[in-house]
Image 1 (cartoon, helix red, strand yellow):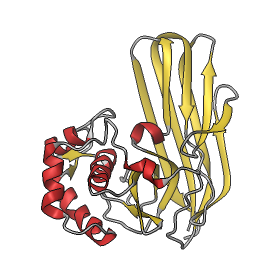
Image 2 (image 1 turned 180 degrees about the horizontal axis):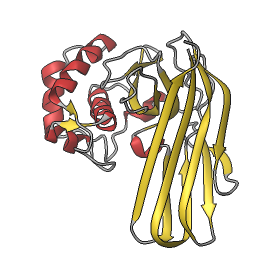
Image 3 (image 1 turned 30 degrees about the vertical axis):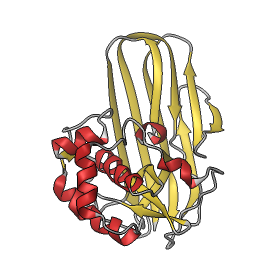
Image 4 (image 1 turned 45 degrees about the vertical axis):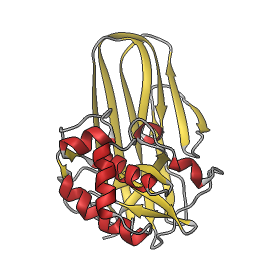
Length: 261
């Protein structure tokens, strides 16, 4: 499957910001499952390019002059291959992904949920956990925010892909399995579907396995991976800090289209 992606992120400030630094993880890597044909980033200034501790391609955009807005455009073409295997080329031990974070720390309710639904530690059990979790937490945009933890979202019984992924990761780590957060894009024929997406990968029997709770998918044939991490904060497409600027508004739009139909 060949996909075209266009993702625009725009920040606007009520006042001029004196300085800002944006950490941008909007460039995918080629792997056995995805081949990058063409990819470009457009930013107000030339960024510093490196990789972070999780092996993600990282662009650091620094704005030292006064500015009232920042626009970051990512676009390109990618071929999704008929291969489910995920690379682990960051050099990190999978055991790193057993560590809980503030966003993935399990609440007592999540612990009870795992005790109720998990009897055997394997991928089949985790696969059966997905519909149970989606039934317990309905997909409800606007019910949570970027800083909502797994416990908060689970208690509210609502959330979006970020929240479902955090809770699922908490469940996997509770039973001793390394699990990581994945940010990326999802192709869907439903044009109302949100193209920017998140899902989980769990390390079991020497490989990473994908779990998309919202779409109840185990095979990432429609998914394009951007970045991975312990949670959303490690893998989010754009994250930054600034001095000045006053109140901020952010708008992001992502369009994923299929080119080979």
